[in-house]
Image (tube, rainbow, N blue to C red; front, side, top):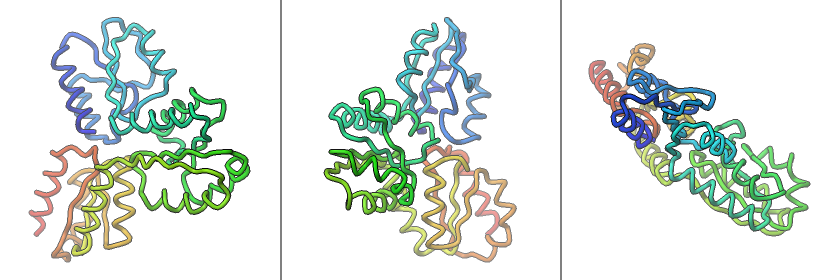
Length: 274
């Protein structure tokens, strides 16, 4: 995700006289979005019709239809979709082409999942199903049960525990199930390292956007291990000053989209409170 931020900055630097747009939030981090705005990189919610402009596709990806619309808009298109997200789009499309009933494990309203579903749906008459919790499996039980074969992909920022729980619910009444574990390797490693750190910490600080899926999941995992605080900026630490003063061992982790500058500021402020 930081790759997309640096790419956007480089595009603007190399095209100072062109309008540079990002369709939707490039990443789920308000501070990074504000920094890009200050550089003249505009976040927009509608496709810009600007023949002298550049339109960047966000890290979460978009639907095939949106790609066609951008290409026909007159704007130059640059795709900053995360490579791991592209892999999920490709896996979902491949499963759909092979007539699998595609199931996407993730949040239906998340831009990444919307894009993945659209890629699958463009290849198959069977509409892809999105499942966000084990309880939702029963909603689609009849559809899954009647399917000759089921293909599963996962939103890149989801927890492996969710995949395992959904599989436990689906497997008993499925004829054939194929799973593509498309959880981002960096997400899995970050979660693993954070859990190890939390084992010996009295308090864990999770830095990142409140609307960032991978950061939120990180906080959820750590809350089960030790006291955990999810913040976006160093200033928010003022709310937890008393807690910081009473904790000797404080661990810090961050979401994939959290700028290094934010992390450094948080580390500095924690040091000042010790």
